[in-house]
Length: 147
Image (cartoon, rainbow, N blue to C red; front, side, top):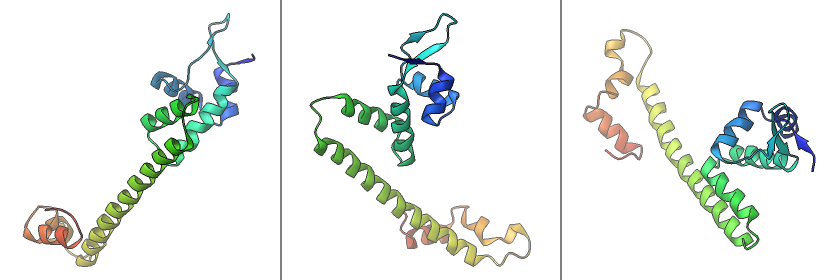
């Protein structure tokens, strides 16, 4: 087994040394030991693990979800259906976030349309709407939020 220093590992995986250390503290990567110079040593497979983590993060998985996926990938009894279910749940969560963000965007666009951009900020309908008066509640309800 060839051991890698953190610098070589991070370069292979396309991450920074700080990222490796962070994932190590989080329990996602474990060094296999230390060199005579007291440098952390890692396995070549850890580069694959780091690339897995990096890609999963890009897809929106949280570190806890990634930890679960890594555990599933190491369990010989895990089925494709279990992995698919986790991914479907994540996709549904993201669909819901997109809906929520779309409502927020619509409300913000409406506020932008209310303001002509001229005059004192004291009379700004955007700032006035953030005070929580009835117009804000109405606006919030019109755009799908709860009052």
